[in-house]
Image (cartoon, rainbow, N blue to C red; front, side, top):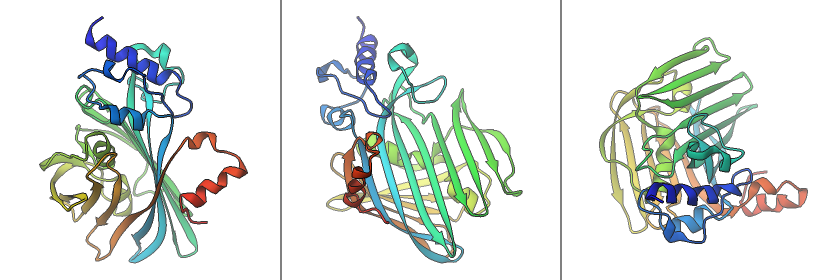
Length: 304
């Protein structure tokens, strides 16, 4: 059996018992060879049958003021279809169409005056970046009392296909292709997979769909410069766009599992959006549906 088939068989075993989101790692860690750049430490953490749930205190710039809110980051590995670009219900039957992805659900909530904002972004990045170097799918939905929007990127051959549906005339319902570039939404999944490392220097990047919506900027691949500084415990990445007045910083822990400690977003309006880690736990949250499970919300220090 060649190396690829060994890797595939191991990953199939990993994903076979995936319920909603969880995966079990094979007992024989050494059977995952070099085509998947994973360590035993990575496998034991990310294929344990649990998701990593992290809560963040949010200071959100909107309409010229800072709004208090909350962000939850949900990181979990899943079996994913390359062709359909959806989570597989039966990974064993998918054959070569089954790959493992790191999924990030970012849930951001804050209030503006009388009404609420709720923003959810989902990003699906292959765990084996050496074989699958591009994020397969990313989407964002923004709901507030005036209306809502939904934007999705799907990886195609040499392009991202983007669809957007919106209540607002300025956005409308649009569909177009964009050249393959780093997605701002995938920076955090890459940090978790790639030992807290991002490419440095000038890169092509598609900026955040939230920034696009809030500042009425048409989504495009554009130039950005990524730089890095470090302290005793953190790497700090700064992403500065060349043509746009947007700067993002991400603080990531230098040691495994490379948790996101905080991030900021500066859009040139004199106010800084900031998210700071409160609490992180690992739980099979998809199984925790009873009223008795609400105690986990207190453990995660979620706002009431």
